[in-house]
Image 1 (cartoon, helix red, strand yellow):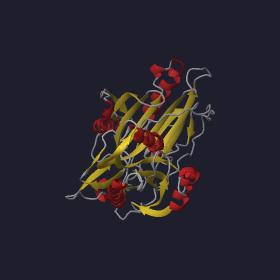
Image 2 (spheres, rainbow, N blue to C red):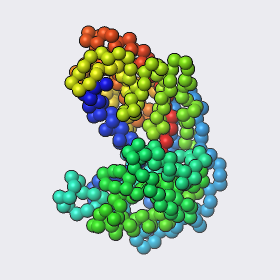
Image 3 (spheres, helix red, strand yellow):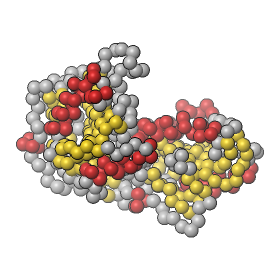
Image 4 (cartoon, helix red, strand yellow):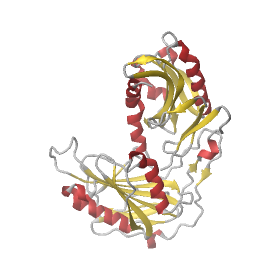
Length: 403
């Protein structure tokens, strides 16, 4: 595949893939100046809603919630001067946070992530946007037998090891439990995260920026970290969110089909054994003959799957509509892919047409791109593209992303 093809794929999927991964990786934000909270108030910000049951036929595993909830009035830290209490029975924790922080809505996971926005740097030409102190406390689902150390190490293996980042852990205590802290995690500015497993659930507490990196915000960042990690109390979460596992839904390999699975983004599919994944691009499979040359490299058939962002309440056609300027309108067709609503279409963006699809999975949008779809210029590639496309779209399944 040519460098030009890779350049086309990057803006369409890979950059936006970072937005989905941001809810798994430490969260960053540069938001407007916070509005002070009243110290004596106890916000009722919890919005415990059940995740919709997936359209696929596989059985989902509910997270147990029949464990009696403890006396929260006796166990949760009380609000006081300079601190506000927050509690979420659905996510299984309560805590205190500084009263100069405000609760904001997490755009990707509003029911599972507490987003706290604090002071920001003064208006100086330091960066493109002023940096705010941000803390997130994320409910990341069942630990599947991992303890805090195992959780942190697996997170590092999935998100950081491929970049050559060393595993530099620090032991800590969070909520009276053993935790692991990893520093210098990537984001708009470097971040710090604590990984802790409580009542069989993974939690990730993230601070941005790190106090040592920004003297102007160091005091506010340090204070927020100390208050939150020092006051948080974990109890059995009271929710019935379904958790669909990869082993429940992913198809089985056969003599002529291989399985591709992406734990981070939560999808899997089969591809013909005479094709191969591209190690440089997650979700991309390519193969067949070299069809020609284009600028810096070979033209080879490929199909690639990636994330496109979160579009709350929108249908595939609604997501596609603002992007119709380079799409053959007559080619747009409604479809069901992986058990979820989708549209397929022919795009003219780039040096040759491509076959594409958009799939909406509980408001998260995935895209599939296959090219070159040009029978006039590359007729020899069409049988390979058809075979690969049908294999991927016919076997695609979605499961709970690993966070």
